[in-house]
Amino acid sequence: MAVAEKERKNLEDIEAVEQIGETASSVADIADPVDDDAVFTLARLTKDTLQQSPINPDWILEGNPEAKVRNLSVMSRGWATTDHWSCTAGKFRWYYDWDETVMFLEGEVVITDDEGQVYVGRPGTSLFFPAGTSATWVVPRYIRKIAFNQRPVPAYLHILARGANKVFKVLGLPTRP
Image 1 (cartoon, rainbow, N blue to C red):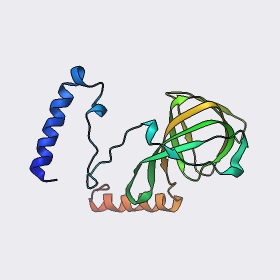
Image 2 (cartoon, rainbow, N blue to C red; image 1 turned 90 degrees about the vertical axis):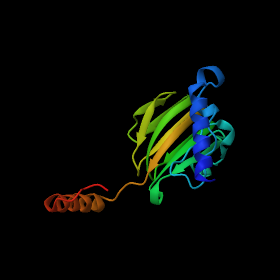
Image 3 (cartoon, rainbow, N blue to C red; image 1 turned 180 degrees about the vertical axis):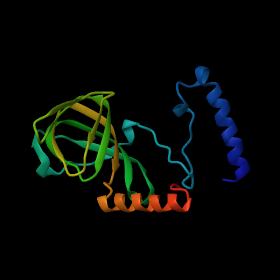
Image 4 (tube, one colour; image 1 turned 90 degrees about the horizontal axis):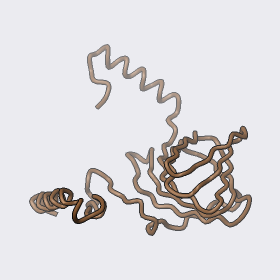
């Protein structure tokens, strides 16, 4: 898409946003998909785009939970992802290879960590799962969440980064790009 055409489209979008109260219920109603070469990633949390993503059968403890997922974004060099996920009724273990922060959007889940602490996930509840942990999930009917996943950074890289920042400060260089 040519630059002039993109600018014209952006102006149309701005005009549409200004009329939201009259013509659309939200900005998402008027936003078009973003070009593949765009700087930012745009995605919507729509249930109809979720795709089957079976839970490891060895993890299922009761029932027949059916999970679905849609990847919304992958951050630079694959160190982080954002996923929209849902699951039907069942009981299962979940093992976390990555740090994961979730925000529950719909439904309810009862999660028990390996120490026996119980957490209840409901819409608006956020929960953090550190990499290397596991939990038992009990989904009475249905649960839907957005998950922010990040590979854990090895300790030696944290130490290396702190050392580099100290050297940069001594040399008067910026510590961030």
